[in-house]
Length: 554
Image (cartoon, rainbow, N blue to C red; front, side, top):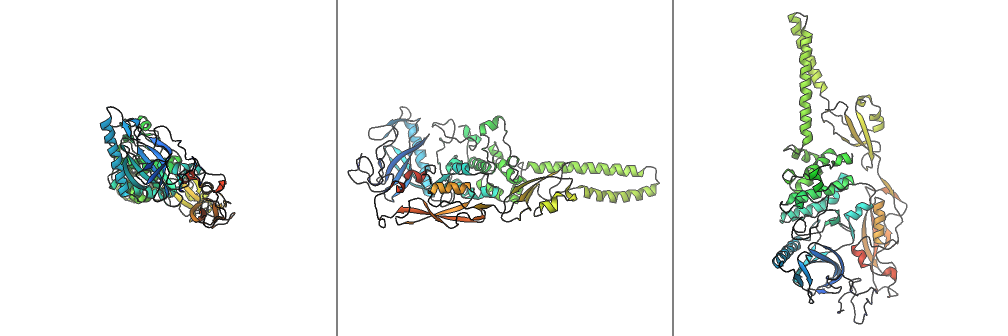
């Protein structure tokens, strides 16, 4: 093995005479990467060291790597289309298959153009940064940042409940902003899903998983990689065009997953028989307008779908904006139904009024009949106005004292669920569906109420001494909002472990109003350490820096 500038496990310089393992952390420097992949320790561009093989998709291989100059971990993606390549030469160059040379070069150019564009527009809010793009070994390499944290998929597995619409909207806000920036630059992601959304320990959610058009389209020249439930229907055919509306579909699908807890029905299955329920049907706490926005953004026909991310962002945030959008076209199905029902009610009332007038005029003199008719007309007009019933405003009222046994609401069917709230007093209504003022068109109208259980009080667990990832898992399971800060380590603490928290263990507090700060011991500073020889518990865990599942027991 050639001399390594830095160990790909602990980032320490590797001196001569290491005999197959790092003299600093003791981990093996022997190559265990699969055949055909770059060997561990390969130098790229004079700046990067290739580490362990991580994954593969239709257009490339992914490695953990090291930026030798900045002395930090990175992800290195190598253009390596398995359907177009015939392996690697002894010198390390990729060899295209016979007869596929032109297609190999064209796809390689697409790969480079994509990552060159991403390199230009990142760093940016909500987008994982591309640090470098280079050509070597008859192929292209893209270098991407890597941070400690977890994927959205892993985070959702740890949660005991679904996210509220506000929580989902807040979590995805930076990602939506990043996708809007991609669209402004003329790029389409086509791979938005929980697997490709990263939640760093410090910072907002970021989107990764970049890929070429061929990778994200079924039936292309590459081995495609689509994400069922999140991939739009047009991605399943090379004959159909994708666009900004393709990413709108995926963002709405991710939001649907967050608020309902269920993955949307895959697009090919929906095209055969669309059995996907709307979000409000699956989770009554999702407002009707919010559910309708998701339905609109996930229409199978791209022409009838919501077209841009800013439209989706606005509609999910403000019901007024959503309703204004719906009124422009066929998206607002419920409005049409309400208007139609209203016309039917008015027609029935007019018929009843005429029948009442005719019945009242029989067997009476003309003059009294006219007088009676006039009087009846006035009375009927009043009755007509009073017969147009709207749903009452129950928000803010106490469910037990003001609503439950109130005779004003006995002809309504009240469906009550509870949720935590830091702003609405316990026992009072947080929201209702249908909203107040909506026309009643049902014979047995139902009002769905969400009643406050008061603030969600959680108890701070004892996580002192836990590894960073295990502490994150515990806090997520407890529903605690937190931030983590790295502090200087003079050698008295185990690296990457919790030193202290600003909330003491056993303390109960409002989870929605409090953000707990957790202090993590950084890399040991050997200048202060008494014993410079590393112990097993202090070994830097490179896998832990990119894979949240690879953690030690607390």
